[in-house]
Image (cartoon, rainbow, N blue to C red; front, side, top):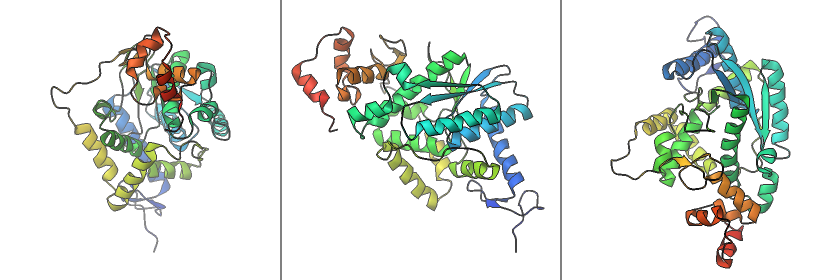
Length: 343
């Protein structure tokens, strides 16, 4: 016997929500999903009327659903926002070039302005070229650091007030686990924040409207809405550290579906003991971007690439920052240690 929708009790249910276990028809699921995102936005006061908001668009399911839902809610509840799409081209042949075609189609479908910034124009390097030099073990470090700064630079070009990203509940829970495993107290304290305030010049505030949306439900929403998105994983990410946290989280979820929210709430309620030394936020002496060191991570990584010393930005080499700033040559021993790509 067909199962009826537990919300309207009229139409036939087509899915069982992973988040709540409710059996819903398509229309009730769409409404429930959109309303939960709306409540997240309202409760956290993510936007102000009249703001210009850049949506970080990669062409994947999360950013495509985010762009669609933001447009729907902006019109439904009169947020009064001017929405734009912002994409980063990392220069990954066979992956990013294809996903950007999806973003361009989304631009036409949602009738939103689109700005694409590339690693090549910002840094003089593509990820293809970086991987050739550094290998496949720590390439995600380069990409993550460069992408964060590229988004800020693109947002400044667009003159947006905020950037909203497609980070979902699974992403946030994975980040909490990663920071626990690494013992990274500074990041652990701030990784569950739904929004960031402006941290200085050149840094645009960010927010996560999908913070409490399960990845499975985002996939279901995109599927039943027939949204146009790119579903291939990055060809350089099989060895990413996040993948191990994701596998662990999926195992937890299979036993206890609320594990994702439990991990997030645990992260939100963690407090740091008084007297624990925390990094002091300053600015990079070279580019002016936020940094707790004399040089920001992006400048150190870029310096390593340009000097043929790929390990310069991997690990702790803060004592070399003064040498880099004053353009002093490194010793033969230092260069030999930093040139190796077997790390």
